[in-house]
Length: 245
Image (cartoon, rainbow, N blue to C red; front, top):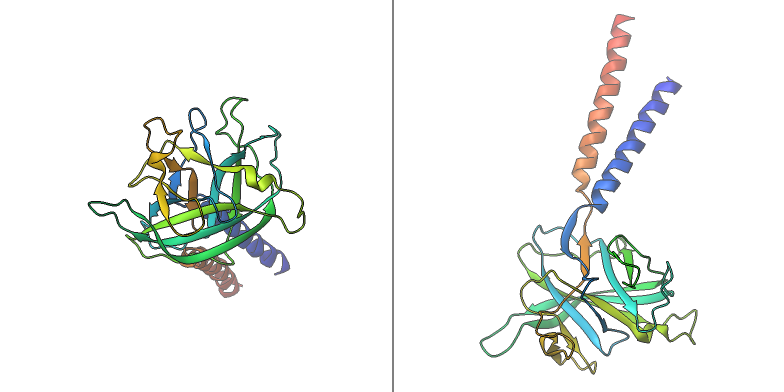
């Protein structure tokens, strides 16, 4: 009996690991970094603040956020300086015949404690400095409505544990070569006045969108279904044995 329970527990553990792996790969939205020709646009504290739009395609909440960036004086090390971030999700103000779309009401704010970014496989060449950050926000997910356009802003923040460290002021959000809808925008003065980055002096006539990825876990129902199947198989086997015995 004890051995059977151990086997059952191990099966549940493997299912949990499998589902967790699937959850990490369940991508809601993805705009990969342009390491070859992209650049980094300063976005820290509340000004300047950069934001980009995306669409909720499945109605699932955002529980993980991944983004790319670097620093003006990039150290080129495997890990970035420890940096805190504030991430906000905004309501969309649609474009009109005379204005571009931009963020409206702030719907959700997540403050991320300082941590280091790391280099991933997207840095093809050694001179492509930059880092990736991953944040799990299951403790404060952003609930969405399917088919709705939202905006996300990401800004580096001062680290309370290192008040004299001002490296966050040199952090820039990496641009992407994946383009969708309107271009990214910037609030230069923290007053809610958004400007299109299409007018950015470095854009060289290219569309500007930012590099980020949003993911979500698998529905709990799939986990329960798998666990239920294992349980039925286990107890069905035990019952057949007892009848025979």
